[in-house]
Length: 212
Image (cartoon, rainbow, N blue to C red):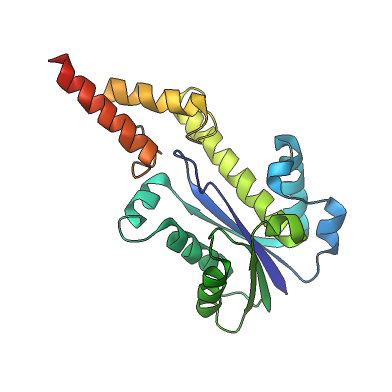
């Protein structure tokens, strides 16, 4: 058995970071589904393939909330956090090889570290592995759909559209800025350790001072 591992939500300022692993004996069933990098699929296609993937392959999902990310970043880099999540997604399973979409610029360092954490398991980590290996494509779909569903839940919690959660999304940026203006703090499910939020908080505090 081998597996593919990928993440969704590394860069967003809102919502969780999700790592998914998909386990198969061979990837023929995944090829028949037509899996590909989740970013190249429409939301409807991702949802459809998600259901098909979980019917033909085992999977595991690791989710880290925005609050947990902030806590972890007090002691670890984002790359270190993801490395541990990748290892957790695979640990305890009987896999001979792991294919991973490497989130680190330094592929060699990430591969070596993951190999050490998964004793006896061969690791192949590459950039854009979700374009190369169907099992990684499948993992990217599971991770992306899981995160998208969580963003929808968060939006319902607030009772309004919060956008994609990415700092470049004007809907997300406007929502956070307005919340800070009205409440003095970032909204729940926001990564306060992100530079985008820190700048918004600094701007808000400066405005408060000038109000006097």
